Image (tube, rainbow, N blue to C red; front, side, top):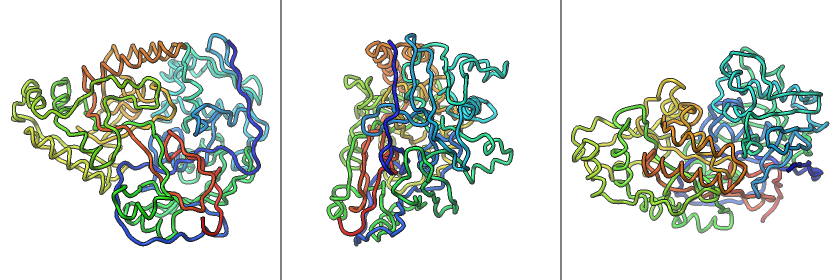
Length: 548
């Protein structure tokens, strides 16, 4: 079967773009006072992230704070339509897929320009992909392109050739895979596969980290550390100039300060929404947008460190000791997680038993693990990134574990320090024994969460922070990646999940994510998406002056 997709004619001044709004876990905030002032005349859209992004290099980004900026600056061959979660053209005008699902031929648009004014060519695609794969780049997402023929030898450094990537002319890119990989097109929608101008990104001094250059709908203007990042509409964007003139990404750590700023008219959108029972939520009810979100919240165990290394009984004990319904009922209102794959992904398995709250069973498992009543258990620290509402959640976990005899220490640090402690390096585990994390699928396929987080060769910064390794799970993921029959793929993914969850208790499972985002009444053109508030297309927005 031959598949083909072609670009749609761009709408005047409005085009699909995914710009990440921000990502922080947890909700609940209290405040009073409200103002619904009109936006400024220059049509600047203002949203908030909590901290400075760790990187503005798309090849190295794996967190939502970085992507909050990167999705506005960069584009790849294809992109994800946020409402339907289908793949659509971006830099590529069209593509075809061979009958054996091994060869993808992309025809590039003629009207794509980088922000420095140069026209994009097929050579830029090849250079960007080689850079993403190169070990010298240190990309935690190079696995996206590892299905390419010859990628393994290229990454190992035994050859400089990459036969799976060819550019027969300036407008054509041919990608050949070593074996079929069903979600390959979806994987190419990740910002890590953005097309870059070599003349900017060959800079040994890495000046591009402070002045990134892409071909997206907005161009970089400036970054005032711990204050704001500013982008401006790119007049030569191939999809048409956005209606918004500028984007100002405000960096506001404290959630109450952020809400005050939103109420005072200093922000047009806000990700941290007051809980429904908060009186301020009632006054803001017409500005709250609610929508599904395919993501999973969990507490990770470091399988390379004591006491969790090689001790599945201990990991199961921790799971049964925590009252997850409390999080649903009292804190966040998100559905409890029975596993890894969230609702909205085809392989989600509602029949998976998971770990219901059972303190007595937790005590029995503690004894089986070698720590009856918690005696002899070495000190354990749970790491989490700085957040007032998240602290409440972590304290609840601490209290629940205390009830079964486990003394848990809590450590809150900023996002960059947190990532370093959790990720470690490819060969050395991070120092965090336990860590709070959330993973939001970049596309609606179980591969998007299972392979980064469970596949043994992705240990470390590539996503498998737990250092989890099970040959059977690896084999099932490998099998699923090569299958084109959806039912067969779902069966493999569900089996891999059952092993990781029920046999190995890879994490402490908390909840499946949902989204709520505040938008001022004058913000129009909002397209919510199960990919989360960070993928709502900013350049589809309009700012209409005056009252709603």
